[in-house]
Image 1 (spheres, rainbow, N blue to C red):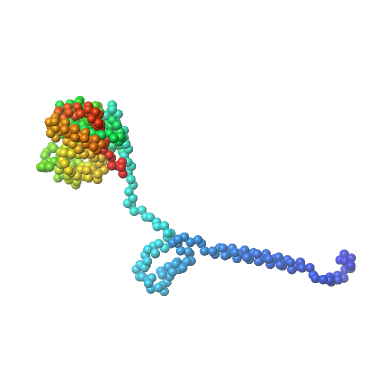
Image 2: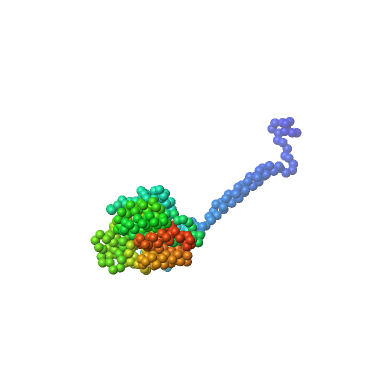
Length: 397
């Protein structure tokens, strides 16, 4: 009898053999799923509690060092060696608590920002050489004085004469400077007319008709210096009207006299001393003068007349382009002596590569330098302007 034709109310006979294990299999499957889930949860919790990677110098959140630090600061039961009423025993450790191994740098305000190097300005065009560059002049109390332009150009570059050759190719160079231009009208005219443009002319600040001679000299191609009267040995005070830069005067007075001299002409590359043995040996009085000359973009030539002095050291401290003459050509005014000095100048140039000779604007000196200049190439030397042999310390920093 099967389930379909069994009469109602009659129970079916019990089955022989073991009962099917459906319910048991279902319970086993559920238990297995719970076990797998439990293992996954345990693994996730284990990984979540893994301590973080520790950076050198940084204690972990629950590291012993932090606990000890808290005990030292807050726990009265801290070891006696770590107790203090005023400041922590290890001040540096307290300051560096929680700081990485890199030491932070605090701004001190002492970092020097380098100033830009002055640009190398091209010299004036030949047709404009007698006219001052309006960007390179400043109106002073006694007239126009030189200055740097707003873009950093210097008068020593703009008013320079290009040398015949550039670079060091074994050329023996001679610088010839003829001073005293403006003292004698006749000698000034002879110097501008007879001397080639390669000879540098130095104008006396106390001379006459200086602007007229300046323009004539620049049109001829000469490079110019300005001779400034400076205190010699044996001078007594500052004679009225001398405009002497004096070691006993204040810096303000000396700068006022310097500005007066500077305003006498324009279009010059630098300053040369007239006398000045005493001043050039007094660094305290000389330094403000050299600072002012350097600040206005000019160079300085020591004419060598005072022997040993401190001008080179002070010029270095002022970042002032500097040169010193080697030979006084006409200390003795005879033609024979002048010829000997010119010969010595050639020997010095061939020995060292450079020689600077300074002379006065005497008629005989002008004639002999003009003759020497015409023979310079045959003698194996090149006459070059002074600006071409002076280095600029500001560009070497």
